[in-house]
Every structure is written in C-alpha cells, then in structure tokens.
Image (cartoon, rainbow, N blue to C red; front, side):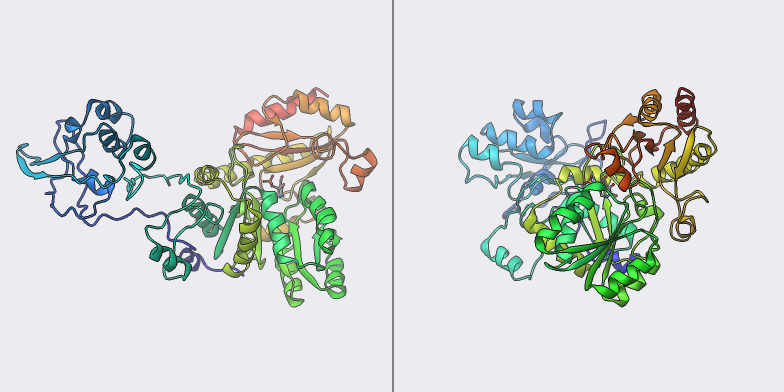
Length: 510
Ligand SMILES: Cc1ncc(COP(=O)(O)O)c(C=O)c1O
C-alpha cells in the first residue's frame, strides 16, 4: 500500500534523534576572536541534579583557563564534555565564574556540582565521565551523529516499566534499533512514499528475512527467471526445507502468473524490476492487481531502479526492497539492504529480523545517509551516461546485443517508459566474440574496476560467466541465458566522454 509523503513523515517508530533538552539553556557562549562571548545570557543558580551538559553551558567563555593543564592540552582536540571530565580525573572539580561579556567583570560565582561524585576511582570515571547523566550532545551539527552503542539504559526501573508497558518510547537494544539507522530508514521511507522502512545488514539479509517472514511454512511463492543468483539459490535450496514451493515465470509471462495464482495458494510474488543481469521489467501495476485479487502480496526488488527512477509502492506493490549496497549507498563502501512498505507488513518482517539478528551497524547507517545526500545527482548522471552509452554500444559492430530498458529494442521498453522516470546506470551487452575475446575487452578497459557490485561512483565491469556464474558449466550457465560474451557495465559518475573513449578503445583492441 502506498502512502503520501505527508503521511509517512509522521509515522516514525521512534522519535528522531533529539538532544536532551536543558531547561536552563539560553544559548551557547561562544568565545569570539577578541575573547568575548557572542551571547550574553546571565547564568542562573539552580543546580539540583545537573547533567553534564548543564554544567558545560554554565561555564563562562574563559572557563578553559580555570581547568587543569591536562584539560587545557586536551581542549583543542576534544569536546567540552571531555575537557570537564579530564579536570575531574585530575581531582580538580571545576569551579566557575560568570563574567559580563561586555566588560569581563564577575557577575556571579557558581559552585559547579560534580554529578559523578559517587564515582571515586579513575577506572569508574574513565567509563562513565562525559557520558552518564546527560551527555554534551551537539544540537547544531549539520550531520546526523553516529550512535555507536549496543544497548540503551533506563535511568530507573519505573522508566523501564513505562517503556515495556508502552507509556513511553525508547530504544532498548542495538539489534532492535538505533537512532542513526532510524534517520536513514526515514529518509528511504520518504523517497519510497512508505509508512515504514527496515534497514538490514545487506540486501540478501533483507530478502531472506522478508521471504521467511511473509511466506508461511508449506506456502507458495512466485518469482521470475532472471534474478540475482543468491536470491534464486535461497528460493530453490533453503525455502524448500520449510516446505515452501516456488513457481518461476518469465518476467513477461502474465499467463504463467495467472495460472500460478489460480492453481496454488500463493502468498507472495517476489521479483526484481529491472532484473539482474538482463534488466527485464515487470509491469508492477498489472501484477499487483492480479496478485491482490488472489490475496497474494507483491514485493519488488528495485535495486537496479533506485527509489528515484521507480516508485514501486505507488505503482501498487506492497513492499519494495533494495540492496542499499548499490545505488543508495552509492560509494562502493558499505553493505546494506532495506525493505519499505506499510507499517503492518514491515513490522512483521522486523519482528523476525530482531530474532535473526542481521542488524545494520550504525557506522554503515551513517554511510547510507551520507551517500543518499547525492543520490539524485548520481542517479541523474548515471541514467544519462548509461542511456547514451547503450545507444552507442547498440550501433557498434563488435557488440552483438544490448540489454537496457531505455532502448526501444528492449522487450519491456514500453513498460519501462510507463513506470520508470530513468532507466538506471547499468547496461548489459554481449560482445561479438567468445569468453576470451570478451575477457580481453574487459582487460583493455582502463576506467572501470573488475568487480561484482554496481551502482557506485566508480564504474564497475564484470563478465557474469567468470564472476557470479563461474562455478556452473557453460551448459548450465546457458540455461539462465548467461553466455560467455555477456558483460555487465555499471556506469559510475565519471565524465561521459572519458567512459565513451575508454569503451571504444577497448572494443577496438579485440
Ligand atoms: C537485485 C539484487 N538484489 C539483492 C542483492 C543482494 O544485495 P547485497 O549484495 O547487498 O546482499 C543483489 C546483489 O547484487 C542484487 O543485485
């Protein structure tokens, strides 16, 4: 079910990353180049159970001068919270004097209460100082902080009970959620028009968790012939252990889909669109109508499309899946996978995922967030380069066939034009030659890396017969349409003319 953007923004599972508020905070005091404060807030004297961030904000602009040498040395390298902690570990609880920013005269003397005074040893301080009882959280950082924690604490048992009995929301354990990851999930939900998104450790983690959660033991699913090999292996060899059967249809075989829905109690139609590596396109609107009329769900693996080129949920799919390792991350530096859809469906998968345990590392979530800031720029460029190069390759005498949904010759071009706003950055093609000639072409390329992935800033090329299908005999590869001369080219964000020159010179060399 698709939802509007305005709906999905309000549907986060946890509050977004928020700073712990300080009731006394009236603006930071930032020393200017002349040593004066930019803000002139007077300092109140209500200490009570101050958190560390409160203490920090109570220091006058020249507070550093009152700290120990050790703290002062550290000051240029580390944050304010650590400076204060360093002064404690030097057995010098900070005393502070409030000064008038205009003339530097003393306004008020403040006795700073050390909230960690119950900790008496350096060892305990090393663990808790700076972090316990309120951190100095940076409220105005442009970027989302990486929260590297495996668990979340509750100040007291009643807070834990409030959480357990749903009177309050909180994180609990790293496998169940993380604030950095939630921000990335919300970003993907916004692009997909989804109520909810679940990020996981890889694309395979996302597809296996989804299949296990949404197809019951003894159930039936429908999938398509052309797809990522490991997904096919999971469907063909692991799901049968739970008595789950699959009907495999050609992406265009709507009669086959109709028959499979008629003859079996199908729970799920799971397909890529475009598919890997032939970029076949499934009519998402049509298959969704067909499946829904028989009570089956539809999941589209839209990795090749990206959330920008294709809105699978708006077209009628129930869930859209991505290997975020590819275009979403976009920098060939992180593994991740995600599913987006209604809160109800995603929660069903989330509950199983909490047991299976393929949680995304928060540092990886940050890389996803960082990568996504340029997703639209990268995808526009990659769409354009891929389409222009697909046309050039199709006209080249040393290229036998090109597979790209943006080409009129593509079997589902008419569907792609209807449901995609761009055709993606990957082009597959067959060189006019055998395994060795094709390898020679690849080895003559200077820009792309020979590697198994796609969707990143760096162009990547691979020969599926030697990469993902190398363990199969030539005859077995042919059953999947993988011939020795097939090349999959993922266009990065390099200059179009450079890529064109490189590909043409490599074709010349064979
Ligand atoms: C279409 C598609 N889906 C899923 C995956 C699996 O993603 P990951 O490598 O992030 O596990 C891949 C991997 O190449 C893929 O091509």
